[in-house]
Image (cartoon, rainbow, N blue to C red; front, top):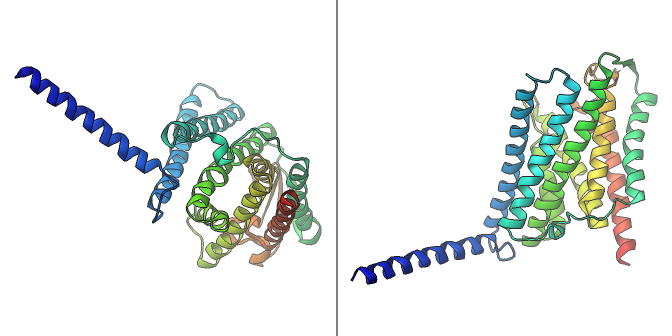
Length: 305
């Protein structure tokens, strides 16, 4: 009798394990998602992992700042932690959770192309040149703690370029593409990308302008990824953009103390200033995004021809 009870318990335990395995296999079957609920949930999980990685990096960097007094080192450590923690979490979830290969999400070892490396440099330089030559302003050099500002420029280029592109143009874009199509996949992550950049103190016009420019720049990164079938090119374009626009040249209506150079522009035109978000949502930058989108589409067309 006792042996029979043990056998029944053992069978029930096995059935429970099989049931849980079946439920998980059903959950991760991203190709079979009729209503898109699983796709949305997996996208949310990716964003949550991104937030967890950044919060963990900030907490640990803050703790280390009590030991290490050199701010430039802390900035680089925080950058490394952010990339390391996020890559560890998202790659683990892709491999063990979704049971997919990394190259399925265009996370591969394809080298960035010379063309997109060149575009990544020309784009921010053209936007910067437009403001310096055509918009009146005051240029100043932030020569106090220049090594910290250089570290900040490198950090904001690397962390945003690597983490955000792997999340939005690698992971989320592929999930949306599987459930719907490439056009929606290029647009939806871009819209989410723009929404996550909304901050307090923005007016309705600021938000609308940010959404327009944010979707445009997101579609640009998506087009670059599709054109080359790898996130590595969009990582380069995004990283170099952040390095120059946010880290090296602080162009805004107020003097930017975080960048190496500060160019305080004298203009009330929101299409020039970009509103509260800054020149990244201004018309000159948005036109630049559009030009790169067209170039990426041409590259893809020639590659498939």
